[in-house]
Image (cartoon, rainbow, N blue to C red):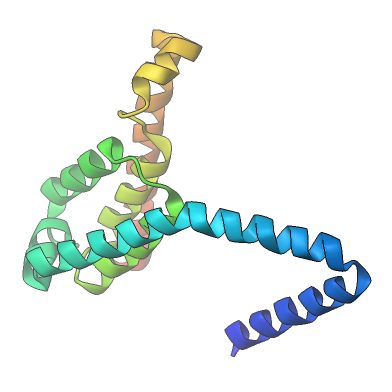
Length: 160
């Protein structure tokens, strides 16, 4: 119901904008379409990635590797994958939801998402070049520590 409300509000405001200034509305829609075209490859890639992961790994395997009972090994897998993966948040969150639905634990998914957003092994050389080795390494280590603490809190709060 809320989604219907949001779509209705968007259509209403778009219509009001069109009647107020047609050219600016057309320009905004062209820019929005260009943004959509730029995002589309990533969205399609994540849909393929989610499909591939869920095809190759059944719910029992995901639960065993990343489930709430996977312990330190599951946390390590989630952290390692999150640290080395370079995908945007709008792609990572649907993947995380699919993994949760397939049996992954909340703490493991929280660690995956946190390290994905905060720790950047793939971008470390660039970060070192701009901020220096010490600052880049310190930021990544502190981010990893914060991600582990946060994921433990999420796991405790969600009951597993």
